[in-house]
Length: 158
Image (tube, rainbow, N blue to C red; front, side, top):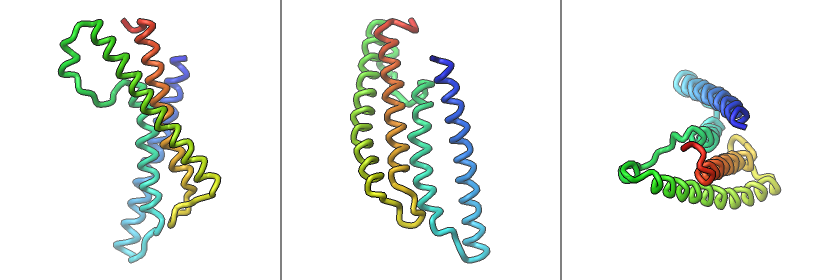
């Protein structure tokens, strides 16, 4: 199972890297067009915002998987091992709860937008795609938190 998660994480990292390169290329193209030719790609800014939101939520899965998200450990680092485990379990439970609760509403929003066929103004990007990346990120973070909670409860990683 760990190998599957690691392979999926590498695939996501490669995809996000390619998306970042495409975003940089689009920004450069827009700068050249705007300042040299007095024209621009009208849909570029809108597409870049959607791409950035998608990158943040999709990358958050890998960050959660590698346990590299920001946290305050000033107090917890001085606690005994058992207290650290209890706090870790509560942290993972709260993270999973918030992410999956929010994902439920993101799912409803995504389905509604897809059903209506709503698209963005300039780029005409289907809005369910943008909302779908938020949904995927939230579900991914929630599943990682549940896996970590299981490991705490099963005393794995001691």
